[in-house]
Image 1 (cartoon, rainbow, N blue to C red):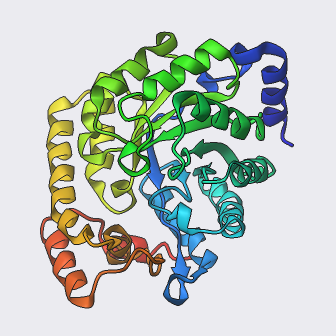
Image 2: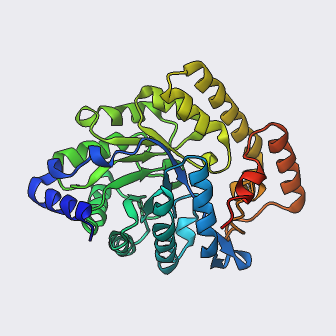
Amino acid sequence: MGLQRLAALLAAGLGGARGFDVEGNRIKGMMAAVYTPMKNGGMELDLTKVKPYAAHLASVNITHAMPAGTNGESVSLTVSERKQLAEEWAKVAPGMGVKVYIHVGAESLLDAIELARHAATLPGVSGIVCMPPVYFKPSLETLHDFLAAVSGAAPALPIWYYHIPVFTGVLQGRAHEVLQLAEKTGKLLNLVGIKFTDYDLADFTACLQVANGKYNLLFGRDDKGLSALMLGGDGVVSSTVNYSPTLREVVQLYAKGDLRGAAAAQQKNADLCDTFGPYGSDARNVQKAIMRMVGVDVGPSRLPYQDLSPAEYAALEAKLQSKGFIDTEPLATALRV
């Protein structure tokens, strides 16, 4: 166990909720929600592709990555696969300047605890993220207790609640209540924030107000990223930053105080999302295809997702390239290691 992690564990144990270093673990700027490399028709992981993938992220100045989330097909992976994926990202990414935050949420509390404990053993993991169960949907109180059990399995790691109600159906419009209850009980000692993937900006704003802005709020709707930053959000967790300069430019220009430039870049990102959106119907994993277009081939998808047909792929690639929405392949190709 590293000295920093040991210090965090001691602080949490001695100082209660106030003892955990929330500010020191605050994420700002951009986090890539990364795709899971696969082969053999999506039936196996292809861990050899993680290293060039991490190199690609580093080359476009992305310093935070979240494997095994929604983009990473997490609930379609086995616990064993998720551990292997965490181990590979933790091994290769930090040396390239990319911090790793592992998604550990699962339908079974025991699986989520096992994944959290495993993440805590990996020196290259900087934190964990946790979605709620989605079939047996929790109440506010049982979600709190679920998160307490998972976070308690990795007390030296910061944890972010992963709020994505369009998929989970859990607590639509009520993410702020999770933070309020955590403040009231003091049982989520290492909860530092929320990965907020929803268009409800009123709820997002309410989250920002809890405990005088204590919590780290990361916004996960790419086409509204600038709005979240202007409200006071710390950063974005994004799919499109993997392969497109549009949202990266939003974050960079906003940080420089160039609101007009950031707004123009945000519109371009929204146009990008509108362009590929129709290709994502019928369980098609369109963004994994876009990764191949920029030279970072992460392989096929796993059922129930399906990949684009060759004709769909060619048509979408022509549209995206003609509009300058995506990275050029020579950049990514040069980074294959």
